[in-house]
Figure: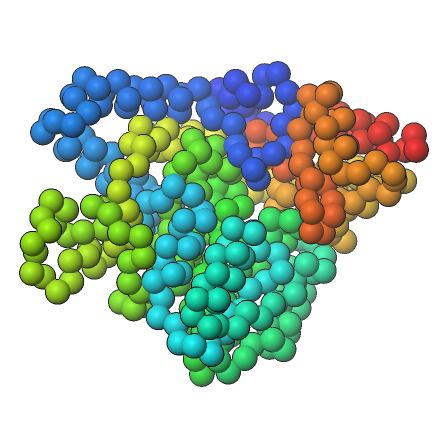
Length: 403
């Protein structure tokens, strides 16, 4: 493996020139060429006129080019991919359009993001549904035991699935522990369930970090964002929908992009909405962001392919995990080397995790705290370096071992 593949891309990221950054799982730094692509798009729109006959073909081509690029990465036809603003809207808009009946049940893992969790709770309240919990938080295998992880998840799933389960909500990568969940194995299990539950997958931590085509093909709803591991601009994401969802789900938040005939309110068509993924797009979005995300994805691919990137990420996360093992008052969450770039660890001392984050920030070392389980999380990407890792570990050691 080439351990220096990140050099060229790293040099294009202004945010990495004055800090040691470990928050890719929150937001990735934007490369300068991507920022320039956004600016050029803004300028193009203004030159054409922000609301003229000349600008609409440009906007349509930008949306279609981005839709096709993302669909290729996901391995699906472009008509199954809707452009969104973020992961939450990608999950919630189609979720709320699914047909539910009072008394049915939703199964949600205990490692889902609060935005999705509370959307499901409100849905359950309005539709008289019951929420069950799939416990995954204490699943702590490393990359060397992914098969054990899969078997443990399936065993737990077997115990909590109910005959009335209608929807299962999971993350491809757990945002708090970094564990990869075998969505394909779960989908196979659900296909044999009498109720054929829908499978909603949160891909916030997977897109741009690991290969996702196989998983996307097994999910009914697979939502992701471009501003984390893809290092694109915030405010742009996408969701891939199964043919089943496109047949059975109704639009929830309706705007002109949802409609077949956007300018007419007198259409007699009994089905006024697009029949493809666009039925879950809404209205005006920030068009220049599209050029920025495409540029970031092209830069990542230019550096290396997705398999090589994952190998580099796993190498770096293993370095950090190993260094943390050698500290007296820190303990990695996972028992084995992390399968992803998310490295979570607990600390055994009097300072709170939030205080540690602030103290590290004063040294220009940026990680984050997680509330459940209570721990700290550092994220390694292909643009990370061993030097950054050793600086982080040294600072953590000084902070936690003096007490």
